[in-house]
Image (cartoon, rainbow, N blue to C red; front, top):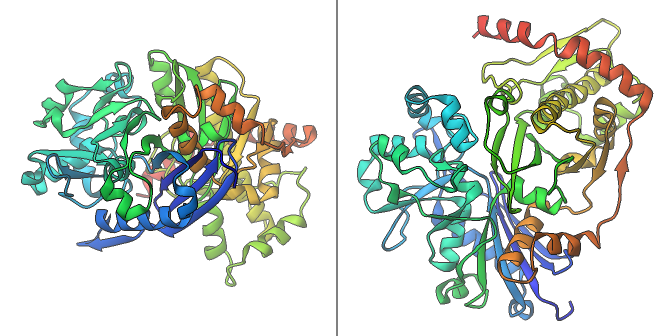
Length: 504
């Protein structure tokens, strides 16, 4: 290691927590990973805040050797978006466990919130639609279940809590504040009237600042636990997908990040503006981008890689491993569609037609088709769905999206990337960095701490090391896929949804 300043990124995910140490030019120097430990009680899963902090402190010690600790110039923390807890506003002790974003506990409260508001009005204020995932619904559930927990308490996301344990500062960033459904992205402030409407105090929510703002410095107590020197600035880098998109270079309109994992998410950028009924109709969600004067849009499929996992377990007695999956695909021509259309709604659908009741389906099965054809159809179907999100984003942006940057575990499946390129007719650049969310968190912290003058300077530093690995579409294949998408996939959406309603 040279004597340049170092940056530390922390990422608290649904399945794993990670820490990574980077040089100023974006080089990954060391990293550490551990399972995000889950617990269950009365049928509800949760994360234990004290165990989470212990695990993060251990990861920091593993990722930052003692000889490097003194050169850490900033720490950035990113996390899953809606997971949160209440802490005591005075002594900081956890009042509740960390309630996961996916916990269904607050469904009745979310329905109450939705019934008590104008969906378009709330969308224009928050960029979102009501959901049990969001902090407001969870707080109403806690109010009903354990009202005393809300007294002199503050709601923090997972990243906010980690920053609090490092610094003692109670704060959040704009991207995580918005996922409470109580923050106005149009005004960059908490919606005090809306919060009070539900009998809650605005003081339940911490100060909200732009992503990457240094909210405090490492305390002596945190130094003893994690090994970082007291005084190092700590920034909340916010929503993990947004942080990852920064590292992937997606900071201007025209390019999107495609994060491919069990779930798959597209993230793009727009100039900051008021949200309209047309934006609402797109099914996309919106928020404030770390780059000043810009906002992001987001849309996803909850069962993308999940469809592949389902295929492995449900359609094969042997549950083929990934090498076998690759072998199956290698025997098929990627320039030719499978002839089967798969609708990948194992867990409902998101943008552009949000519907939690949508069901998955195959169309076009014949006796001559085999396991490899079905697997290819699964990959094609997820590509069709992401194409529908891309086209919805183009309509609201009023401009073409010519390129995507692929990140996440799915980039290892080159057959899938080629299918995606063929379906969209767009080139795909493969991110050459294995930990984009961690790098994005480190970059944003570096900006907040003055290591970089601004986002453009941070991007330039990382881009100097970026290599080009591009997947180009096959023109002939694109035309075939375009016909299937426009003449089968899109027209069958409404009949499929009507059918899904009849079998619930």
